[in-house]
Amino acid sequence: MKVLVAVPVFNEEKYVARVLAEIQRYSSHVLVIDDGSSDGTPAILRSLADLGQISLLTHPENRGYGQSLIDAFHFALIHGFDWVITMDCDEQHEPARIPHFLAACRRDEADIISGSRYLSLQEQADQPPVDRRNINRVMTEMINATLNLHLTDSFCGYKAHRVSAMEKLHLTIPGYAFPMQFWVQAVAHKLRIVEIPVRLIYKDATRHFGGILDDPTARMQHYLEVLTQEIQAVHQQAAAPVLQSCCCGDGL
Image (tube, rainbow, N blue to C red; front, top):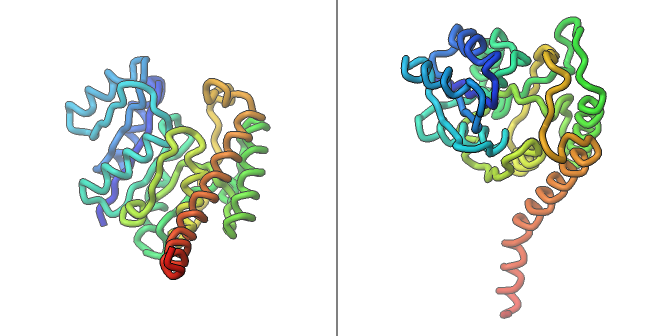
């Protein structure tokens, strides 16, 4: 089982070297996607790449968290990995949990192993900002209701993905609404999904999304629009062959 750990990074000079050193305790295959960082992050990553400690993809400008994940899936596919574990680089995802994801991969019972900060693990001293927790709760409930899932945390980026399953998806959302498209397509392709607990950690409650998404109301509206559009697109794709067959049958 060949596993890649992929880490999207944007302006993380404070954490990146320490986090990557910890990840390397558990994985010898580490990909970092630098999403147009403008601080000291690129220099740190170049030095690590020159030493052969990481593989590095660099976006010349900020393209979005979702695009970083899409690029990681493509990298894993073309380099022959079986699984790709995605995690953040701000010390809110513990590298020490990587062996738990690897164990779940070896059980071979799922295509997506999704971390959940709201499954029982231990005492959860940290709490997310109220607007983030509320949006996560509302969107998770909506995803569960519309897609017949039983998720407890639809936004956690700490996940293991079967690469052959990701190859089936057509993922195009570059920004933070990426999970809305991801879950719809995962269900449409009948991928097997399980959750495992990860610790809820918030180092910096003041971190922002950028632009209009810093407004919780606008952010929620954006997520709803992407979810609705993706569901509609999947339904249209499913109906297209039927419509074509009907038209041909009628001699039209």
